[in-house]
Structures are given as structure tokens and as C-alpha cells.
Amino acid sequence: MTPPAGTIGCRDAVAALLTGQAADPGLHRRATAHARVCPRCAALIDDPTAGEAILQGLAPHRLGPSNLLRGALAVISIFQLIIALPWLLGYEPYSILGEATKSHLTRDGALGLIVGAAGVLVVVRPRYALAGLLLTVVAASANALTGLIDHRDHEVAASFEFIHVLVLTMIVLLALCVGRHRYPRPGTPLRPEPLRPV
Image 1: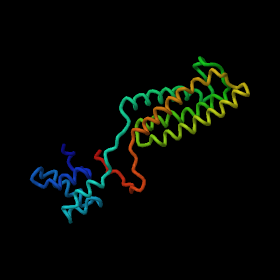
Image 2 (image 1 turned 180 degrees about the vertical axis):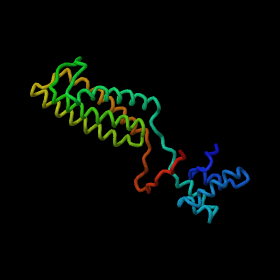
Image 3 (image 1 turned 135 degrees about the horizontal axis):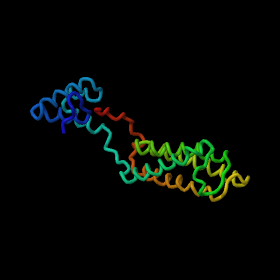
Image 4 (image 1 turned 60 degrees about the vertical axis):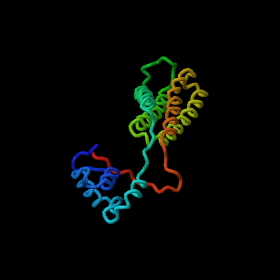
């Protein structure tokens, strides 16, 4: 597939330069123009045999979470945000799980907003799955600790805390997202991914 006129990525440029001008002269011109400005591909102009080394140096295709997994995470994250927004203001419009004080609701709302936003971020950018998982685990741990204290002080009904099953479900989904993403091996130099045409 030929990229739009004037734009080409490293992988396409190297492939076009390796196949030569006869295959597609327009693509070859764009590839040459790319190699003149790209530090990674510039070696190919001086040394035509450098193409294989450049291709091997490009980041391998990353395996990401499936669309089903991302969809499930999106639904739960958005549901978490919908629940957390009123709580942030100390308001409990649902009243189906028991009573809680405004201070408990506000804290749950703030932590719920963080967790929901982390889930949405991972849906949009799966490469942040590990950061989202760690953030969610820390927020869930803080929520569990403060929930136990509030329960001891009779500021929240035990039944109210069942809503946090959503966060536990998000932790499982985020862990699955982390497991489906390839990270560089230790000792591998980190390379920025090539810019993609917009």
C-alpha cells in the first residue's frame, strides 16, 4: 500500500529503497526524500546494504490487547466515571447499596475518577497498561484502607463497599492488557517509534 503523497515512514522508505526505482518511481522519490532528513535512514543513501540493519533496528510489531478486552475495559471505565462524578461532589444519586458519609463519598469519587481515567487512557493508548495497572492498584489499596477505617467509624455501610468490585474487575482487565503487550528486553536500547503520517 502506497502512503499518501509526501509522507512515508522508516519501514516503507527502507523497503522502497531496497526494491529500487523500477517498482514505483513516486514512492522511490518520497523514500529518498525521507532518507535525506531521517537520521536513522540516512545511512541507506551512502550504503545501500544498510537497509537490512535498519529494518532490524526498527521496533518490532507490538502485540496489543484484543478489541474485546479493550471494549470491556472501556465499558467498565466509563461506568466507573459515571458513578464517581456525583460522589466527587458528595452526592449519592443511586442509593442502592447502602449509606455513606459525604467525606467517604468524596474520597471514593476522587479515587474512582483516577481509576476510571486510567482505564480510559489504557483503552486509547494500550502502551500505558502497566502504568494504568499500577495506578489502579495503588488507588484501590488506598480506597480499601480508608474504607476499613470508615467502616470501623460507622461512616459507611458494608454493603456500600460492594460497588468496588468494578475496580477489582478493572485490575484484572488491566493485568490482561499488560500481559498482552510486549515490552523491550532489558538491555535493549529504547528507540522512539517512527512518526506516522497524519
